[in-house]
Image (cartoon, rainbow, N blue to C red; front, side, top):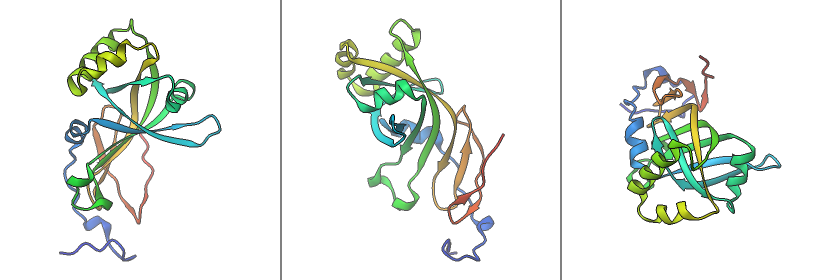
Length: 181
């Protein structure tokens, strides 16, 4: 059976979504893409290796990076974990998890800092020790608020703050219904 998503008469309710694999995607990705907001309101996309403690994510970043000022001044950040292009069968349908998060600075005295540093070292090697010792590197923690997970055509899901899949998203031609709790 061929799936025709360009036909305006296409019945999307007949598309069978694939089972979500949120955890697998997070674990496959070594870094996240993040969108922050500059002082003038324009978006800035950047990337950073991450660690994970519970359902929160942490990054270690330099004061000199543009996104660091944005993270300090404007706490809303969008994260994306995305399937490697070389592993994707169809680039339009790449598996991806997008999360709306809230950023908070993690001081070195906070027990979370040490836990995140251990995870960063395990995931990314000795360079983390060097960066952690530099004066201009600081850590941010990101608490998920909500998100979405896509793993193919007609296979999109709402995700809650605990990274739990809530429901299959339905919509036509990219216009998805707004999700409210």
